[in-house]
Length: 408
Image (tube, rainbow, N blue to C red):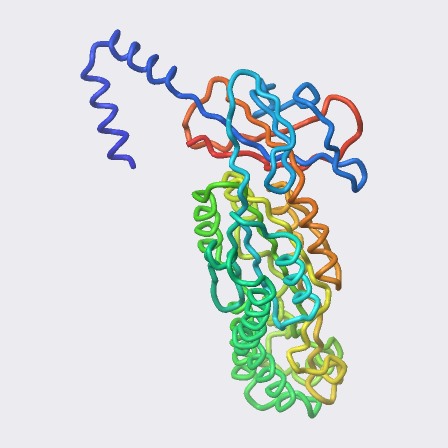
């Protein structure tokens, strides 16, 4: 990148000053970028569908912009349009992504899948399903020719299998940790080699953390892939509540009362080993928000509050005599991060045990929106992130839209 910039600079220095100014002026005048913004306006829970171009205000980095066109979209139909100087012919076909970050198959998630095929997807739409194992792209021909109930059944069977296989290593690691704690601390005290025992504990917790970690690089690739797809992009993320192992405070108290030997550092605490689950998420939330917003992807975050038990009885794990472990919810970091991401993309967040109900609400939000177009004044392709804000002139409304774009 630096070599390209240096080469361009040398070329400009070799030209007469007047020619430089003329060429730069022509190049600047040739830059015209149209920005498309899906916008949803609500009063309470009701979508407002009678707004016109005069009702909207668009700001880019705080500067008011001139609106070129407004289209009211319902599903894949343009219900109404206002065009100031030219037509934009918006692409209203839909790219759906069903992303399942779940530890076990849940019947209500299956009902959400049934609802999607029965009531949502239409000819011309595309579908990608992402399970804990892999991604599946459904061809348009198959979606249009095969019975929808057959496709739904195949997806549910695949999700059930992939959730079991994809989380097997996590479940086995939790079980191994349970057995280790039972062996070492079940009798009420520690063993002879504390350093070895604590090192093993750290290894278990690090492994669990690595299995839980979200790869920012893959998220960026996902956003870039969808950016290149025509039409509107809707991602529905089903994220299941996590119950993760942590040490029972009673074990900590008993253990430390029996292990404070002269060679054991007093500042060392068993609780530190389990702090892997109390750290911030392992990706830059602000960068992810910008990346998805730039790609014009609406992410709807569906937090399923029914936790998986990984075939382990949480009540039994709470017993000091058995393992010294308790299963505790540790989804706060992920939950807050994806709520921010959903809001930055114009999507919604729902938290419920009923995945089907939460999904229906998210679908309703995705199916009704305005498409606003404007041409930024004084546009410069400098790679900076341009912040967008949409307002309605009158009335108290809740407005959702993507937060901005990269000026590339």
